[in-house]
Length: 102
View 1 (cartoon, rainbow, N blue to C red):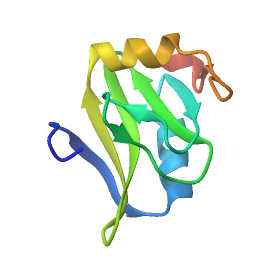
View 2 (view 1 turned 180 degrees about the vertical axis):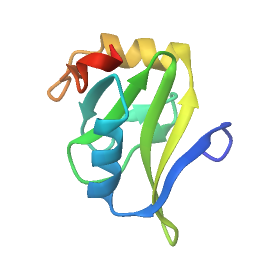
View 3 (view 1 turned 120 degrees about the vertical axis):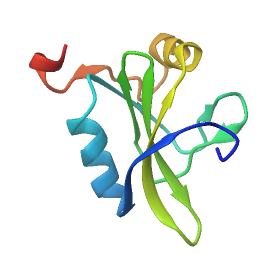
């Protein structure tokens, strides 16, 4: 993920805190299993299910970095957001967290 431009929204937290942050700060949340490939080459790790937040073209992603802990990052990617929204998988829940954000 280091090769992508991203904004760090939260750092030094547990994976549970990262999940809660994404759920509370995203218009839509999709859940994927560990090992889900994002951007065609990065595999996500973490406690299942892994939340991916969507706000327009922005993705909120929990990123586990060895020796650094868990971060929540924001990456703008219309293509990856569309791919995520169209996928049909086991944890492909799509839910609105806050109706006022829709």
